[in-house]
Image 1 (cartoon, helix red, strand yellow):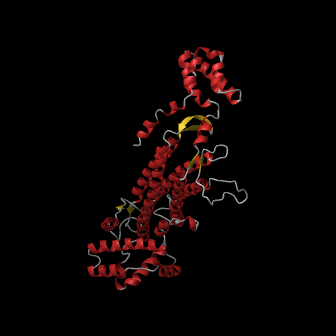
Image 2: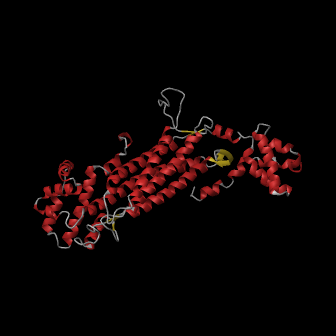
Image 3: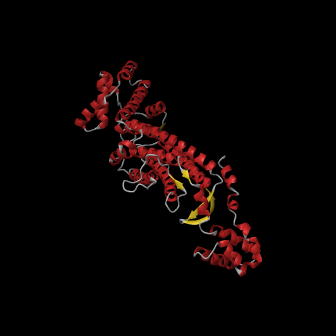
Length: 429
């Protein structure tokens, strides 16, 4: 990601300094477990805990020679400890350390995402309640359908964020596992008791079975949950973009007093944040595909997943945190043009009431549905062609003279909002 888009907290989690620090936590937890089992003398453990440290620069120097990041890290740590450094990494394989550490970093990153999600959700809930009974036109296929409440749009997004939070919580539970099971998962040189104790110290659960790695369906679940969150954010952003179009102008992104929309056209006020969210959602879906491709590895493992993960894990969290921040800004500062919302309700000359008219006429005239549908559709098409208002054309239709006096009450927007309170009550609003 471009630096100016980077989330500082995400950057810290995925920095080399923190990555090695988390790996050291895993190594020291293993030393504690071995010591409790009598394998490492207490005085040696005390020495290890006191002196264990690393320098990112030194790790890089060693890696330039050995071309193995974990060996370089362990060597750098052992150098600082001295003689008792020989106990570090006892019975472990590289993936024991890397995968257990990665679980911790992924879990920490998910916590950041959930915090940002809850901030957006609070803003959405406020907007939903504020515009709970503000009528606007609903659209299907991009075409005017029937009236809806603007608050219901926001409530719908709020409900999706609740599902996103459930998926993130599930992903967190699926990634909160560690493994210290050795080169192919048989515990040949490091018994299950060590793994159990290490995971207990780190507040992880020990994987019931593993090979050389934690299986990548766990990690794919994390990235897929983030990609689905991105899809929901894109849905919000797409709606804002459509409603900000010149022909619609019902909603607009906030626009700063010194902001400019175009280098060429001073009048432009573009939905740039919403468009940016839509573009970033495509990245998230790409990361999800890569994460799923990482699931099927050769035998007990290969490292084809490793290079991809070094890119997608930091980037996926930077991306989704930035999207959440942008979308929160958009919703919080959203400009709602209530006059335009009312104008658009009336734009089609009353056609948005066609279903209610049809059903009422079926009941009043006791005619087959298809017959009444044809009468209503004939007048609707004439309205659409500019021959007059829908109500007036229906009132002048000889086929409807028996119910002419009943038509006026059918053209009432409040009818469509009469269950809104009940829907909101489902969410405690």
